[in-house]
Amino acid sequence: MSALIEVRGLSAWHGARQVLHDVQLAIEEHEILGVIGPAGAGKTTFLRSLNRMNDLDAGCRTQGVIAYQGIDLADRAIDTAALRRRFGMVFAVPVPLPGSIRQNLALGPALGGSKSGLEGRIESTLRAACLWDEVKDRLDMSAPSLSGGQQQRLCLARALMLEPEVLLLDEPCSGLDPISTSRIEDALQELKSHLTVVLVTNNVMQASRASDRVAFFNGGRLVECGATKQIFINPREKETHDYISGRFG
Amino acid sequence: MQPAANKHPLLRKRKRALEWLLEGTVLSSGYIVVAALILIFVFVGKEAVPLITSAEVHEEVSVGSMVAPTTGQVWQPVAEVPKYALLPLLIGTLKVTLVALLIALPLAVGAAIYTSEFAGRRTREIIKPVVELLAGIPSVVLGFFALMVLATWLQDSFNYRFRLNAISAGAGLALAVIPIVYTVAEDALSAVPQTFRDGALALGANRWQTAWRVVLPAAMPGVFAACVLGFGRAIGETMIVLMASGNAATMSWSPTDSFRSFSATIAAELGEVVNGSAHYHVLFFLGALLFVITFFLNLLGLWYVRRLRGRLEGRARAGGKG
Image 1 (cartoon, rainbow over the protein chains, first blue to last red):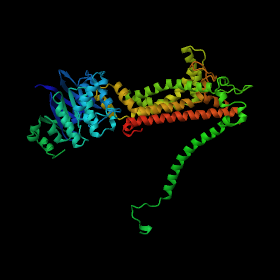
Image 2 (tube, helix red, strand yellow; image 1 turned 90 degrees about the vertical axis):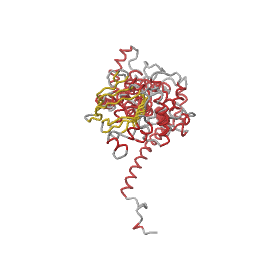
Image 3 (cartoon, rainbow over the protein chains, first blue to last red; image 1 turned 30 degrees about the vertical axis):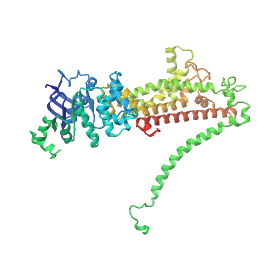
Image 4 (cartoon, chains in turn yellow, blue; image 1 turned 180 degrees about the vertical axis):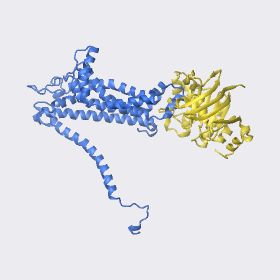
């Protein structure tokens, strides 16, 4: 199986501070890649460079190649709006936009000018995000009035409305209770049959439960990347071992 | 019970004199402002009431005669037979307010969207203070500008008959309204959390879609409040309208006809009027009417702002009331 995305020599700077050092990493199709590491390890910067959200931070600068279907996603010539439609993203803090649940879900397709089959897609994405049963009778209810866990699953559903090829999740469960967390993890297992997931998480156990492969970042460097089992049972690097066994971080 | 000298530290102690003083000052300034507002209305209202109640005044004019289709068409308060009319003044006031808002609101809100969403930091730091400086220009200067420069220029451009009309006065008025609407709307837009923009951009929105479909709706309560403030300024502004309207009390809704507004009428005539005369009471009646119209439209606006805000925060449906 050839890699879907191949990151080569990716470095990034916030102002003068280098936050990513020469990262080499391949992301396979239909896998869940867990990205773990202590705070400030560059996990989020790495994730945000994949769909060019870093462009929005003034003072952030990247270098390197993100090869995808024969083009370089880090290239200036990339239509970032189109890229972000294909690489959906969910943030650590749920961002329900003002308006109803339905309006939130319809926004993504509307931005791309498509309106057909919206109702059916709303149901299927809400089901995929394990939220349908809780909101099916109140789709016109205001989205910000949902609970935190529901909001986050709504954000997941909203990203899925775009039928993305890759899903970028930035600590999607950081503020959630264990039940909401396990619902999202269940949803991810269902989703990976038709898309690829990059899951940044501060929760090592979540990475071990949910991901097929794990990449461990520390101090802006990719320390190692391998099958989840291998990383958790038999890590190559001592740093990795120390982190996953909770001895630093 | 323990003696007062060694009370438990969690028990309330007596307030100290300074605390009393500070609390009293703040409290009374609050009440003074409210009382001033009420007293202004009471005073204006008291002088307006004889128009409705006094038989002496009724010999010359009544509210009925001011709006009647036969006698309520002409405003000639100092003629041999004084004539008073409400409708031409009301039409003039609404006409110029409408023209001013039609010019000012799109410009001000558009400029606010530009500065908060599209302009670079450097540009914003120049534009915002400069527009806000516009608010400091005395309205007599704006009126002068509207009278001498804008009116001529507009007449040359659009080629209409009367030089001073609702377009010239409305354009001058817009100059007074723009900075208020702009600065409040810009603050509201800038206060929208960055996460909303990120959320929209992550859904593949471009900057324009982000501004129009996400940031503007989220800031709508503030933007609408800005428009309400702008309306209040426009309907009450006197000097610009007095100078650039032509002051002819016509029954025409056409923006190219001269007109006369409530505020300008009061400003122009109250200084000359005989104290206690019918004319005097009519002018106060106009003032009270202006006060009531502004007050209720502002109230309506604020109610709507609260409703919008409630809907945004998700209270409207959950709680059943906004």
